[in-house]
Every structure is written in C-alpha cells, then in structure tokens.
Length: 310
Length: 90
Image (cartoon, rainbow over all chains, first blue to last red; front, top):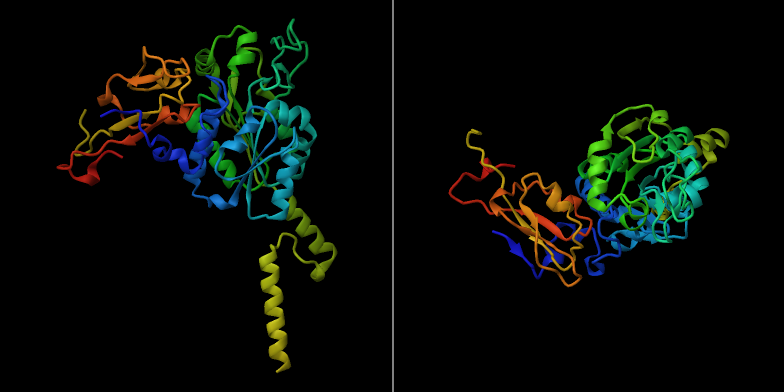
C-alpha cells in the first residue's frame, strides 16, 4: 500500500501546479508554520477555481517574503515593507487581477505599517495574508510591533516592555472589510478563510499565528514546533464575530480565532469611478479599462464612423 | 458501524523523505495515527515519518495540509473494483 521514496514525487504532488517544486526543499526552519500557510493558500486557490493567470502574489522581505519565490503564479518579491504599495499598483493597473499580499508581521505592520493602514482605509480590493510569528525571523529575532508584552526577543533580552498591536483591531479600526485570524494548526480553516477573502470585494485581512522555532520559541524556552501547536490546540478559542477590541494576545495567553468582520463597502476603485462620473459627467472615461478594451472601443468607433461616411 | 453500501475512504500516503525536516506535525496530528517517526535518518539528519499501519489511512489529507515542507501527500487508494464505484466513500 505504502509508496515511499517516489521518484516522481515532485510531479505527482497535487501542489505541483501551484508551487515551484524545482526550488524545494525551501529555506524555512524545521517546525516553521509558513509552509502550512502556503499549502492552505494553494488549497484555497484550488477550491476557489480562479484562473491561475489572474492571481498575483506580492511579498516583502523576511521569512514569509520568501513565499513569492515558491509559488508558481505571477509573483513579486518587493522591498522591505512595500508589498502593499506594489499590490495597490498592480490592482489599479489591472483591476481584473486578484492580488494577494503575503507578508510577515514585522514587514507588514512595522516597516510597512503606514501602507497597511492606508490600504485598509481606502478599502483597496486586495487580500492580505499576514503570518504573525511575533518576531523578525530572518534578521535575528528582534522585537516586532506584535511581540507580546514580557516576551523575550534579541532586542529586549530582559523581556518586552512595550504593548503589542492587535492586528485584527488595527485592521478593523482602519476600515478593513474582511478580518479573520487563525493559528497554523487550523489549516483547513485558514484555507476556507483565504478562499472567502479571495472572493471578497474589498480589503480582506487574514492573520495566521505561526511558530518561529529558531528564534521566538527558543529565546522564550517554549520548546519546538510541536509544543507551539500544542499551545494553539489548548489555548485557541474559536469566536466568530467577536468584537475586535477583545482579541489581543497576551504572552502565552488565550488566542481568540475566527472570522471577526465581514461587511460590504465601496472599494477604492468604485469610489474613484463614482466620484469622477459625478463631478466630470459623461466625458469621464471609466478608470480601469484595460488596453485591449480601449483598442476594441476605438476600432468599433472608427468602423461606425466609416459606415456613416459611406 | 453500518453505512449501507457506503465504504470507508482509503488513502495511500506518499512521503518524500529527503525534503522532510522531522518536525513531527504529521505524526502528531494524524487523526488515525497512521504515521510514526522513523528510527532512520535522512540525508539532513532528521527522522522522517514512516507508515506504521497503511490500512488506517482514511484519505483526510490533513498531513498534506499541515506539512510545512510539502513533503507528504495522500492519494485515494484504488478501489477493489467489484464494488459499485458510486458508493465508494467520498
């Protein structure tokens, strides 16, 4: 029954149409949760039935930022913290694209914090997946804006004296229209949430709490990846629709997970079009037309003009 | 348990030992405890999982989903053939 050491493993793997199998094995540490999130994302794309040519992945710098290099979709590895501006540009240039930002907590909320809040404020139609491991993994375990109070990091060797961001609350306060949080143990739920987020119109934010075994777990003497998953299993409480003011995470405390917010609001592009159509009137050319559409329109116009001349 | 003509789903586990980093997620979170960490080492020095009882696999694919290394996947086991295919457990 069991087929071990399959020579065609990479080709036969059902993930092979979403991942660049020739780049495996990847650089992530043993017990890291990012791989689980990438698998869940691939599963979500598979289930959503979207055209793979119409999805783009943008990521910044960091461990999670490496995701862009491993997915077999249009992907951009941008500069540190600037994944959301790049995604915004992609979306505005071609509104048919589904743009997904894969980013770590430090990349997204520290260096790219302003971009995050303003994309949420504008309700930019992108999906943001944040893998929150409470630390800067790639650069050596520095404290991030989400490191829990009293946790140890390489820049706070006597414990963190600052209070962290609660990312769902931050996103909600800024105006995000879809907010969910899971831990890396909730693989099926992450997959379901990412699928919903892909189909959601507006700024959708999925936070995934993931273990960083090499830095966060080790510096805080919390054991390995399995110990982290056990903590998630014992202390994660599913609370759909909970007020985002109540979802902050204390050091090794309860983690509230679930889908907190889902609402409809006009997106940035809707607002641009509506406003200019109102102010400028009929002369306004609807923003968001692609070049082939414009060419087809010009051609049709020229043809009708030629017919009129005859 | 009696499920009428429905059969239990069966799966075959495929493991790529050379990619495995021995985190143990698949072994610990397999609902039917199909896997166990091997005593052997792979080229990197980790203990990859091995199948201890292939008959227990129910094709739930949770190991495939939780594996951070993309190093394990499950395919549905070929059915016996004499049974009606439509009644094969989904």
